[in-house]
Length: 129
Image 1 (cartoon, rainbow, N blue to C red):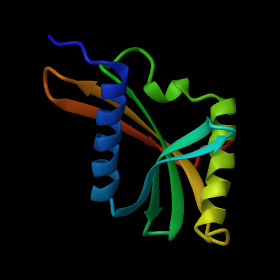
Image 2 (cartoon, one colour):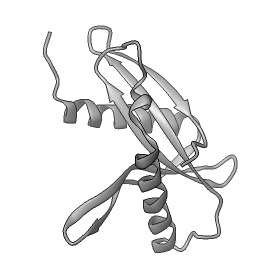
Image 3 (spheres, one colour):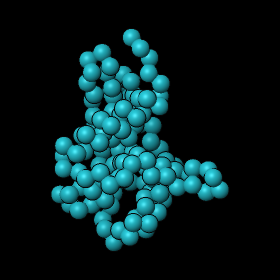
């Protein structure tokens, strides 16, 4: 079985997450939005979408892994990461003049199984920073 690099797993996980969101009526607004300072990337948001059912902007952190394990990929998102996502979300909202819209942070956990070509997806909504 071929081993995949973490960056490939991450990209594939994001593609799976986008299809998952689109099937549930989300509109994808942006991908891999990042904030930099003095040439250094401070933070990045994997997916920015609109939940059309509630007209809410959703900032989605996608965490992926190659095989199911005893922990979820989403377990790797700590308070510091959530704080950086929140700050980056506020920059995106301001830049796109959507400051007045409701928004939230979600995490999508993707466990990929390359043998069966299936993914286990868990969507955690409204994560507090």
